[in-house]
Image 1 (cartoon, rainbow, N blue to C red):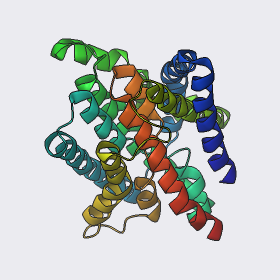
Image 2: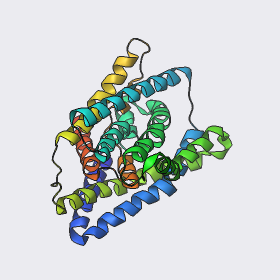
Image 3: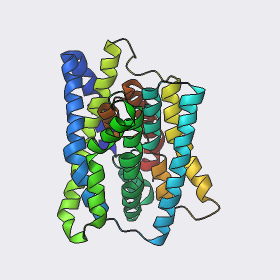
Image 4: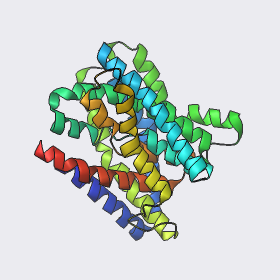
Length: 306
């Protein structure tokens, strides 16, 4: 866990330094790196992990309720962003993506192992693959196509953008119909190593984005916790797990793993969707940075005490 935290801090600081040292070249490199992840890393990771997911009745019920909770979270985020804060469309899209995309992999897996034990990791994988992945592939990418400035004009262009800039979706479809033999242990393990290896790139992009916005006079480093960023952070860290808990309370005994993962901070994939579709980079980067910092401060002591 200490290594994860150190990687996050170092990668973010290096991203800020690189943008200040090399100007726009660092930001360009970060964006190209995230697009590379979108097209060449996420598809095999999605395929191999989803093809090997083991789902029982209890896990399936929890997953179904998690979808209901995510729907309620998304509606809450839209109401706050569009009706209360009256943000522009790209900013609304960023708040929605921050609410939808949780860091259930980079932070979720280590915290589940530390707090609940390694036996709970199988539940974590099921939640990550069946809840978090669709939230990105279907939910966040749809939001990007609908609200982004780079997604085209009109329904036809935005629909085309969803399908042409969402390669992990096709990997997920193939994984559903593929036999287990196409996902051997060695490739599943390699895919998980690959996605963990993306962690430095993701937070480098966060640091570069924050520094880039600071140079343009849009934000400072560290980013201010203004109303849109605070709303995105609160919805992701507080509203999401509370809604899941309340929805499941009268129906099932919700696995602790699911509740913990529902409380994870904004995921790095938020930055990928933001860059791919032209959402509000300031809000996305600020929410990822602040939610991660708050989660680390709140949860890491628990993992050390467990």
